[in-house]
Length: 209
Image 1 (cartoon, rainbow, N blue to C red):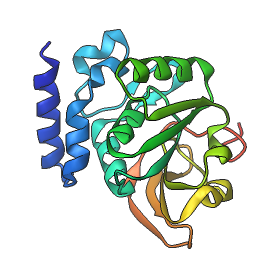
Image 2 (tube, helix red, strand yellow):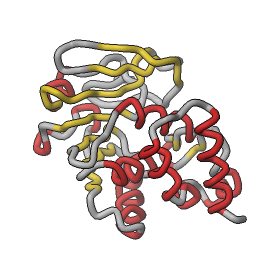
Image 3 (cartoon, one colour):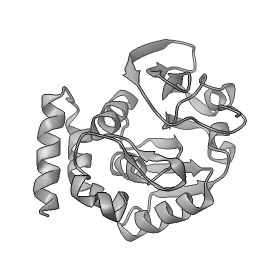
Image 4 (cartoon, rainbow, N blue to C red):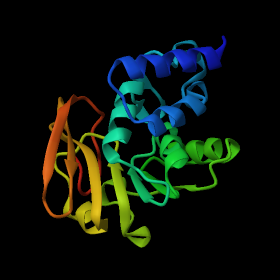
């Protein structure tokens, strides 16, 4: 397949779907999404749908990745936390935009796979850490931006504490069946930006069962 052509078509579709941030679109246009999916899914890597990966997790559909990144408003000098590495694709998008990224993944095998791939692709500014992602990563705080990539019952106080005073948190908040994209400021200001469906966040600040 001509993956570069597929990637260009995906970016055009994202524009038609309402993504306006040119830095986000440029970042997505550079990243070989086909490298982040299972071998058997490479031919459909650029369709606008989520795909399963190891450990019962998913790589989010391109529109959701673009929309969440757009809502996060990442600048080139920002220090960013990602809660839930998964395949590493969202971390790569953030790595194109931010000064540096810390991404936390609870599944050691996923973390290792994402770390190896991101390193191979040259993302030296992305650090993948194994641990309870729901609790964030205290030693790297404060973060200018925090992105949660799994369904959360709420935005935890731990993440709010780890966010810079003028920062923002973007997370899918709701129950395990459906969530709303929420943008939260540490001040408590909050806005909602449409329904999404993510796999559940597990851990001390996630879903317990």
